[in-house]
Length: 102
Image (tube, rainbow, N blue to C red; front, side, top):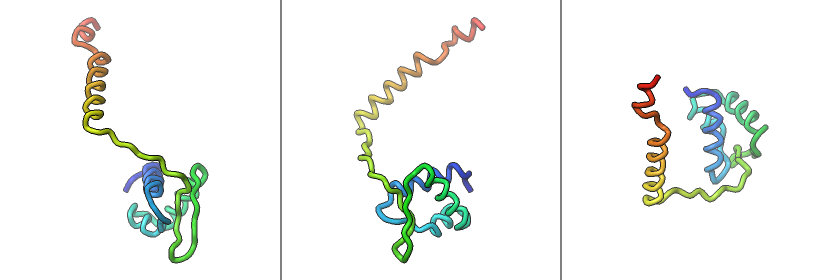
């Protein structure tokens, strides 16, 4: 079982990517907690996020936000980023000479 902040982050992630309303009972089953716990999580999350609810057979909860266009790096961009990160690591890591002086 995951801790409360991690569960709430996952709930927001699920709601963010959902195309329609999400039922809370399946969320409770997924996270191994009670319906009341999910309801409490949604209440707390609604203080920071615009979460709407709808009753009925097609109801549930939904994050009211416009989706951002997610963009992933292509292979060339990924390789370039990894090279930059490696160079940064080289210049920010202590050298063996730095540890000898201590």
